[in-house]
Length: 91
Image (cartoon, rainbow, N blue to C red):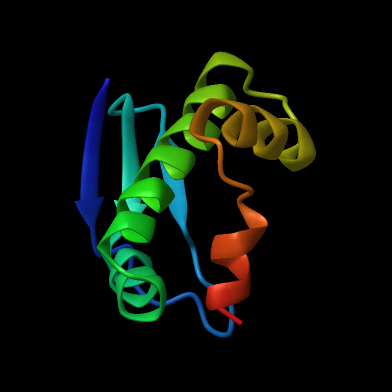
């Protein structure tokens, strides 16, 4: 599996934080979101966002049918950060 930070494009009013691509077995973290978190909360928070997003997407990789709430709980437990902190920055 690879992990990339890259531009995931425009999604209208929504922000795509990260995605797991099973075709390439890759987790892609949205560079635009990383930049917004860094600007709002600092470099340490940007790094914690990346760790949280990787954990979230890795959970979906391991359990493709998992609900978002399950992936959030897993990411929270693995990264020590509640994903809603980052979602709040994007609103």
